[in-house]
Amino acid sequence: MKNSTFHEFPLAVSHFFRHNINGNRQERKSAMPEEITIKDVAKLVGFSTGTVSRVLNGAPNVNPEINSRILRVLKESGYLAKERYRPGRRTRRCGSRICMLAPDMSANWRNNPLCVRWLSGIEEACRKRDYSLDIQFAHPELSSRELVRMLRPYDGILLRVPSLNPEFLPFLPKNMPVVCFDSSRPQLPFPQVAADEYAAGKSVTDELMRLGHEKIAFVNPEIRHRELAARCAGYIEHMVETGKFRAEYLVMSDSEPREITEPQAAPPDLAGMLEYFLSLPEPPTAVIFANDWTAAGFYNACLERQISIPETFSVAAFDNTVSICEILHPKLSSYQLPLFEIAYRAAELLFGMIESDPPDGRREPDIHYLFGKLVLRDSIKPLHTSFRSCK
Image (cartoon, rainbow, N blue to C red; front, side):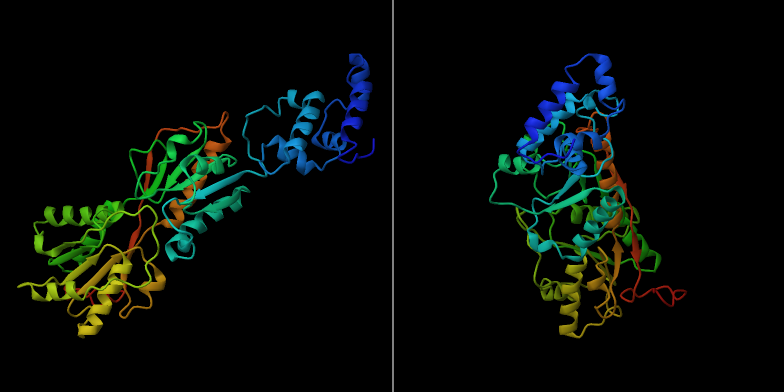
């Protein structure tokens, strides 16, 4: 039978099944292949095998009328009765589509170096497993229910954990696979992959002590920021454990958490903080900043006052944003977070949930922590004479 056009489709199908399906069993066996294939179905309906495959896989980008007609032929032909296909089963297939959602970040973050790193991890995982990826940032114009309606067609969601608990989560379908990444929230009912920020804070502090520093300050520009606070907590713990903690070396500022964040256009002005450190009876020999961006503001303040780094202050930070660390003078030592690896592993975990039978939408909310490392550059001066270079 020749391929039918869309308008001829109902007549062609009824003709085929009147002559081949309604006969006796022996006639059906001789009229149809013993093992009907997706190509046979495509020939019957007059559409490509790709369109039939998308219907089988529940893809959202198929016209509803075409979808229902193809499903009817799949059922009547006996294809759906085959063990190889069971409704609701999710096996590895072409056409699977996931969404990376960052609900508290504006689209202006897309080209931020940190975002590029975790987006690269997700894209690499999708490429290897033949998944398609949509990237969604904040949608303030949508209500929670409208946002969930937009997310329903996806096979799974990678949620970049926001600073505030998202209001739309209770409206998600119970069987929707979701994996959180880039931050940990024990109260969220989803698997999560994140950096161990607390261990990072301890690691940087320990390395400065290993290089001979004992008077170490820490600057946290946002005490309500969960990840920055965890880095600060690691610093405090290590300083207390070694008996070196001094309250005057801990500098924190507060700001109201925002539902939607925008990347800052310029580093913060830390001229007042520099004056504060210089005014102390015993100024710190090293200062740890909660992120590279804040450290860049301190560099600017030191340059304005002609204060030498690392001669007066050794400086370390977190994130290892190469576009910042490598252009500062001297080059900034910074803790590299495994953002690519975090995002890649989160995507792999999501794929496993999608491909389980039945789809696994609510696994135990385990948190998988990954560790980074401090990249030493020229901004740290060893105080031990045995250390000549910290490159």
